[in-house]
Image (cartoon, rainbow, N blue to C red):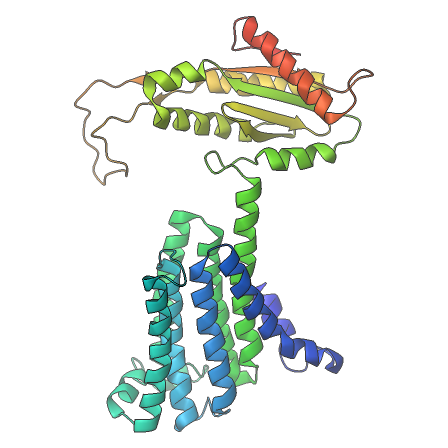
Length: 391
């Protein structure tokens, strides 16, 4: 998305008749993003879009002398280029807060205060901020390839590194979006020296955040938070797309309620995640869903029940062969840098699963009917002693 937007929105690439739409593009992105961020209570997105919109407006009205060695335009451009990556990194690490709470208002005041500070630096001609903003680390001759000041390049490098580490640790679409937003902003400001329009490029950076917000909302609606598997809503939609040849398996963790009572809900959650991991590795084209509680569904969209049996049996044996050590009360939640020998007894637990499998025939042709047949087969598997598959 970043590269596509920056390539298509360069001057002279798109035909003239789309110019009105290109001019409206930033308003649509920032306006729609602000509404979506407010509706889904994502204040970080709103603050980041507010900053991008403010920079877009300032660059539009300050003039076009960004690449000049001196002048008001160059000073404003330098100040924005230095502050922008730092502010976007600040937005990325913020905790979600209401917009009209005391922390939310304070954040808007902080953004407005920076705009005022830029105005004062320009109007009063302060030399100290100017010297710091234009500080050079290496010979300017080696940096002639970009209009960005060296302090801004350092700010982008630090901010991107910080957010990449954060993205790797958290693996969240919005965290990844902030990384790509910083990359988009850096390319947008760098492209000014080539005649690129900063408003549309900054809007593309905002679009990355809006897209991540939509992706996160989709994942919340269709994916189970505990196991990471698609949830029941995704299953219902997948069932509607089936053809005439498919198989549905209902999977249940054996004695799970008793297991929860003995070892606690935290261990129960750990168990469900382990089973979900094994089912997500299903071979033969099977796709696993969390159905609810300790129940899962595996859907084979283009296989018969006979073809699905060996793959389900392999998953059943893999779960039965897996075990994990219970986390002790004094065991740290994060892995320590240096391992220590265990001081107490090590409690290892394992679970098994029962599976019911069904496919459509002359009596049960609808997906919901097949799902109910799989549930009945599951009940027979549990009645027959559990840890087995019944068709």
